[in-house]
Each structure stands twice: as structure tokens, then as C-alpha cells.
Length: 255
Ligand SMILES: [Zn+2]
Image 1 (cartoon, rainbow, N blue to C red):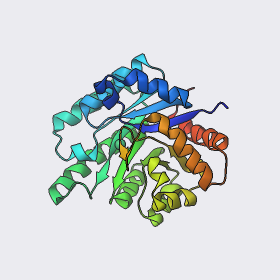
Image 2: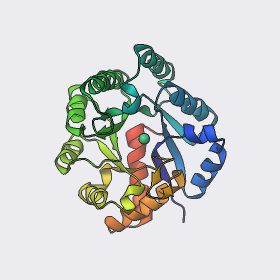
Image 3: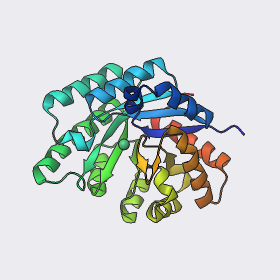
Image 4: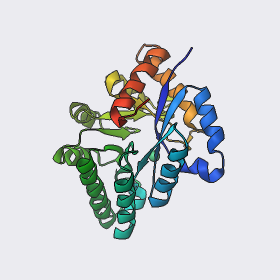
């Protein structure tokens, strides 16, 4: 059976660092993943993913500064990422991983810096009509207001676990949520997927990440698709078809 899946959120630079990028891509392809959207944490990881994507059609890059890094980033760090965006706007899938995280990072001054950096990238996304690949933790509502303020057209809330009420705001604004292996054990994530229409769901590995003992890689997107199929009382064929169609629309992917 031929299925086509898209991994909408992968920290692919880690595989480049470990020297296993080829092997990981091969395994992903064998499981039906035809496209991996890589996301940067900072300038270095963003550049690595961008460079690798130029040699590999299966990898498509997002560049950005993650909220775990943004609170300590200098104006120069931001300028370097901005240059990456401006020089590569034609090949980017979007800007990410960017967002706000008020749970893992604590302290009003750090939150303030996160806000400044995130708003900067939201503005840039609006200016270049780019998709946002978003990390939102304990800041979901604030992020939605900011996206609405700048009329952002396309955004995905990666690994969405936030409030059900905010989920409605995400969906009514036309944004997507992505889900990963946490769907195999988290009742909350299962409920979020149950409440989200299929045309607003995309899949991701968030790899490499340890999901309760399973070290995720992009090929696990197939497992995620199977679980979504079970929750939606559908088939993996249908889930692959719809989520891939969604991902193509979300990131303007051409394949
Ligand atoms: Zn991530």
C-alpha cells in the first residue's frame, strides 16, 4: 500500500550532527514519509537545516529562534536569522520554531524578551507571507492574539496540548495543529485530536525526542497516522491523504 506522509516538525540538524541524516531519511522514505519539515532552534541549527535542504529534496526548511533560546538571544542573533530568511525566502517552508513558553522558562524579564523576539518574527512572517511553525506553552491565547493582530494566514501549533477553549480560537482563525507520538499515551492529546476536524490536523515527529521510552524519528509519523485513524474511525490511507494535503497547503509544498 502506497501512502504519502509529511513530517511537519523535525529537529533535523541533530541527525546531521550525529552523521545519520542519510539513514534517517532512508528509513522515513521506507515508511511513507515523502517530506520532512525541519525547524531551527537558533541561527546555527537553522543554517544547518537550510544547507542540508539544498542537497536533499525530501527536506524543507523552517528557520527561527525557539523560545528556549530567544530569551537570551542578542539583537545580532536575530539579525543573522533575519538575513537567512531574506536570502532564502523562496525555498523556506516557513519561520520556526518560534513562539512563547511561560512554563519551561520562568521570569518576567525572560518572558519579555521572548515576546519581543516572537513578535519580530510574526511581523516578518506577515511581511513575506510565510507560515509560522509555533511552540506555544502556557501562552496560547497571547499567541493567537498576536497572529490575528498581524493577519497571519498560515500557522501550525506544534504538539498542541493547550486549553480546549483556545483550540476553538486556533481553528476558527484557520490555523492547524500538529500531533506526534504523544497521541499514543496522552488522553489529553487524544481528546484534542477527537475535537479537531481532520482538515486542520497535520502530523509531526518532533524528533529526535524521547516519548516515554520511544526515541522518535521521522518514520514514526506513520505510527501517529495509525493512531489518528483509530481515533477518527478512519483508515491510515485516508489520514495520510488528508494530512498530507493539509501540510501541502500549510507550507506551500510543491510535490
Ligand atoms: Zn520542536
